[in-house]
Length: 239
Image (cartoon, rainbow, N blue to C red):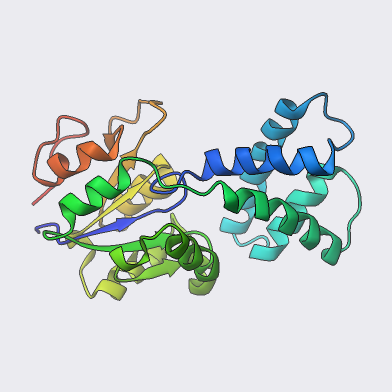
């Protein structure tokens, strides 16, 4: 089947989440002070990212809710007991710095422009519609996407097939007619393939490997790939 639409992940795919999170947390720590147990800001920043990964995985697995994973991240990072309101206030202060650093990756707008006429576009994210719709509007690209489908409201997260199928249903397309682009090989590309979509791994960091997946290292390679040029990834899966 011909690819008719592109589904997009947001964080670390079109939006530089890791960069904004690091810049924002550095500014936050300059204001709040370094929590006990960290030798310097770099150690604290690395710990924050590792803690985020752990608790986000718990959320994706259904072990906690969206606010719960935020609160648990804060409590583990500062290594002290905080009630919900205290944890929420700490995170809100961090979020103000984080949001000030929001930016798209430089290759996003040129590729969306190139693909605008030939393909429909939507978003599937493991976050919440409140966060992601607001983020896309702040970044000036919400009107590029027909639908924004998010795990919090769905009750199912990537890589579960139900998440991908819900996004396809929002476009009224069969999975075979949809490509999914995301930065995680298993959650995004692998999950999409298992759900019957064409999964495309955006490997911005050049990790490599995973020859079974279609892989690109930048979005500038996506138009050629969708047109049938597969030298950047696995054997041709496009109909």
